[in-house]
Length: 103
Image 1 (tube, rainbow, N blue to C red):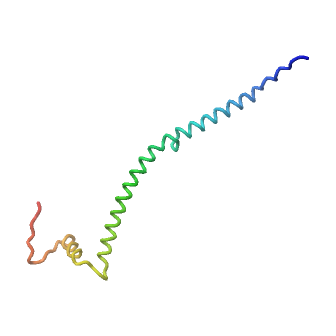
Image 2 (cartoon, rainbow, N blue to C red):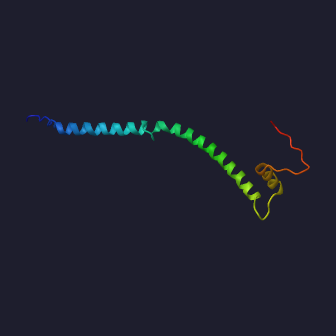
Image 3 (cartoon, rainbow, N blue to C red):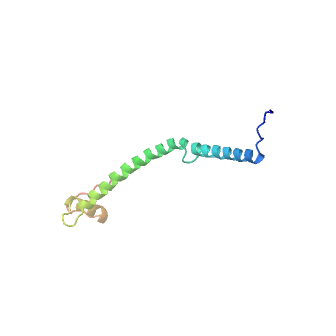
């Protein structure tokens, strides 16, 4: 009985396998080197740390402004704050005060 040799693969099947392999390699390279890939995670972590610092600074500034707004409540105005604002915005002073220029 003669031994049968396997049928040679067609050229089309070899091209299809090659294209599939190239596509898988490209997807893998994109997953590793792309803008959201594994290698970009370290830069994202650094950006996240910077943004957390900025967020804490903005929260502190917001809290300070909220406190200032609370002090300017028309129902219970803080007299020291009103005096400070009046002096800085309107350039007024009491008659018995002495003004010392800083320049």
